[in-house]
Image 1 (cartoon, rainbow, N blue to C red):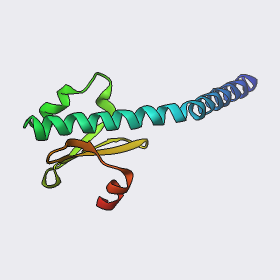
Image 2: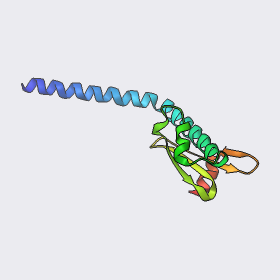
Image 3: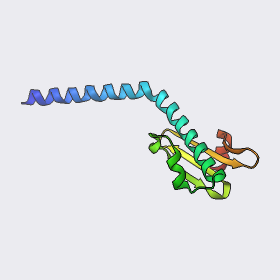
Image 4: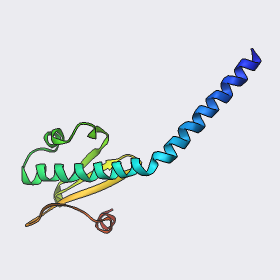
Length: 113
């Protein structure tokens, strides 16, 4: 049986290497989808919350299926919604009088952190 155990170990290592290679290959696409999903969520929920006047929890129902991975938080004093995809992306949208809800630039987001 020692030979079988050694083979299983090598098969497991090969599968792990393939999985890591696939993750590295798809990482740019995953990151782009995450960025888009976070931006979409922040903008939609900001509009729902500060233009529609609904509660944050109720606004989450407006998101498309598959957006459950996006975490939302509210900075009510700044009229801002922050959306994050863990380890991948973060976006913020804030309500601006006369403009509605707009996505913040990376520089604007850095200034509030």
